[in-house]
Each structure stands twice: as structure tokens, then as C-alpha cells.
Image 1 (tube, one colour):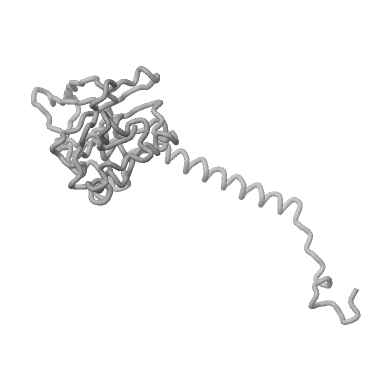
Image 2 (tube, rainbow, N blue to C red):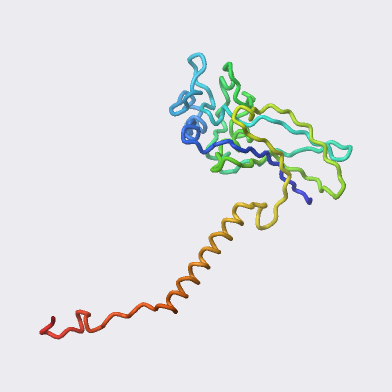
Length: 233
């Protein structure tokens, strides 16, 4: 595997597309420090002891918090976690003057805790997580490895198993992948294109065969209004 190697975590049976979950955030609060007390739609993670939670809502509260460390043969392997989120999200959706407050202070911890001295625009694990997935099985970028991996190399992964997927019968996976000029591997898109293309080809063949076997009878042009005589029918 040639560098850069992308490190993803994958979750199964996690419905980030659930209507109540997707709505449980406040975009104004995320990008503007003066809107810190705006917690509309953030139920049930709106306030703690009468003070607003920043960032509020279920999406932020449930941010993935497993951690991985890698060893390549006998050497430690560093993971670059910069620029793992969309630049447009960092620049326009998460404020550089907005800092976490009262986050994960309740009796039930949903996921990752945030450093209160780092603005939300630099909390890239949070930004990646809050771009919600459309399907219940999804991958999100954890970081990149800038070392070539060769055949018979040994990769040792140490995992801090913090994220609770057992309560909803979920599954967690760690994925190492590379990318080409066409992008990363995506079986779903390939199967979807082949299925739709095959269906279009079948319908085109069926309609052509139907036309050859039983062609449609053309209408009589004499019945057209501009071909009728003044005495008309």
C-alpha cells in the first residue's frame, strides 16, 4: 500500500440518518460565539444545570471516541489527523471563536470529550462526525499514514475500546485503504451503476423487440386539422 494510507473507522447498524438525530443540532451556535445560548432543536442535550451546552444536540454528544495507535514492525507509526474534515465545514460551519462549554458534563457520557481551549473549527474529529451518514453502515476518516506498507510487514494496532455499540447490536471495524485518481473503493456505487445500466439495456432491448414484432400503427394524416377541407367532418 502506497502512501497516503487512509485510516477509517466503520460502524454498522448506526442510523445517523434518523430524523430526530439529524435535527438535534443548532448550526447558528456552531459557527457564531454570540449564539452560544441558541439551543433550539437540540433536545435532549440542550442545557446542563441551566446553562447551554456547546456544542448542543445528540450528534455532537455521540461523537465517536475510540482511539488507535499503530506500530509498523517494531517502530511506532504516527497518524496525521490534520485536514481530515471538509475545508468548507471548517471555514463556514464551525466558528474559530466558538469553544466547547458544559460538554459531556452529565451523568451519561455519549462519546468523545472535547478540549475546551480548542475552537470547534479545529476539532476535526467532531466535524467529521457531524457530517451525518445516509446509510446505517458507514465509514468516517480517522487519519492518514504517510508510510509505504510492504508485503509481509506487520502492523500492530492498540485499540482503546470506548465507544458503546453493544447496546444497539452495532459493530465497529478499522479499515486501511488507499485512493487512486478515481477515488477510493466503493462497492455500493459500482453495483448501483451496473444494476441501473443493466436495467436500461434490458428495457431498450425489450422495447426494440416489441417494435419489431408488433410495430405501432401510424395514424391517418387526413384527420389532422390542417388536412381537412372546409366542409370537414
